[in-house]
Image (cartoon, rainbow over all chains, first blue to last red; front, side, top):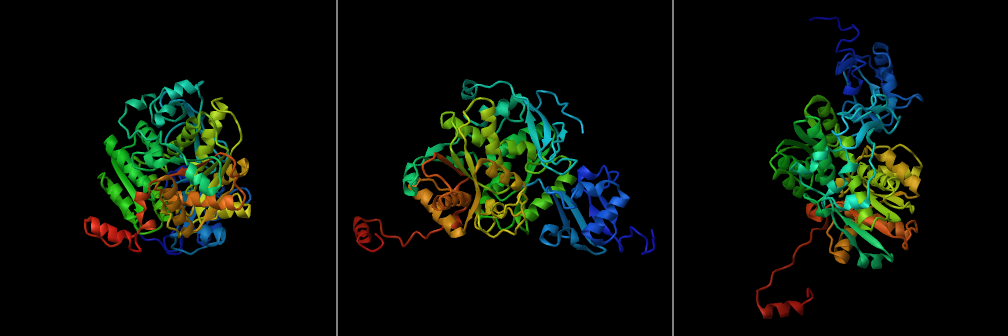
Length: 103
Length: 417
């Protein structure tokens, strides 16, 4: 299993995105997919190119994060950082998690 | 999305799940977030006509309201902890202290593990068993951990609870004793909650009561509202103050009041709902003040650990309810919380948990600010037991004296006496 590091989707040049159960219909059942690095907004656009319609479930019509979704870059909730402008460098892990939990 | 195709009897009179954000419906089953928009799913019903008499003839537990909950009809025959039907105590001495005319305390210490969480867990457990889950699990700030561990023990199934490692020792002991699995997590409750959400996605037969079984679980809090109305003689109070952690309790008490009105069991006399937070974790109060309809998460820092949820799931709905009813969400600092715990204990003999101190503290604040009407009948929620949060009011007993009359008389005439 060797692949050139420049290839799109290779672990060293991409980011991994954890997909919650309710969105796995978009990813053919995959719980984890890869996307291009950039800002979170760019990562979501890259995801949407691979899995059309997926970004629209995370971001609303006005371009903001939906109010019942939490997105983490690494361990940090992006609402504590720069929201959709949060940088997502190659090698990081993005988690998309329903916010309806707890308490 | 398909509409409800469940067997009518499986979850009682519950008929479907409905998204509170976009209105999409889903069949009753193991979903908690809307596939369209991530919004929270809520249980919808096709209720039969109900009478006060039929409810009054029921057991002295939350199951007297079983028709209004998503539980199987045979629920009474299942071994459970039988929570609910806790005291609604008329608090005349506290009212006098505060210059109020009629004040009641809904005292949730009377539940099997001493907090309102036994109600929600009982409903979640019934639904989880019905859906074939094998393990009862939760992320918890403590009270829920106690309730899940106890209910699972009684039902004879495995429990797994995830807690922040810095929880009060009383809550850790009162969970561990039931023999389930308890995992301390190095992080805040919100970190624990995130892990639980990821685990819930990964472990197919684990029912995280407040995550993947949340639509059913949250319905259990309606029983607080039902009981308050019934115990007042089938009336609604004019004002109610409710502690806000995730916000689900406040939202469901409002839902209970509205259901009773719709069923014609109480008159719609108008009521205002107020939410109480600790200043060190007050994202909903901050959103209320700022006029926002979304809640910006915070990193909690308060002694009221059972309310230390920085990213409250039902925050937006709390804002909807308090705005619709003419109430508000306010907060008080930890020193006021401690003072309020002592005031409740010293005027009414009720030792509440720190969250109860938050609730009474906010009641006092809102009276002082002229927001609450001291002449209107008011209910406050004492959500749990002070014995679980002892450190907040820990006091030394003083030096011991000899067991003799002389020693006692000497002590009486000393400054300590």
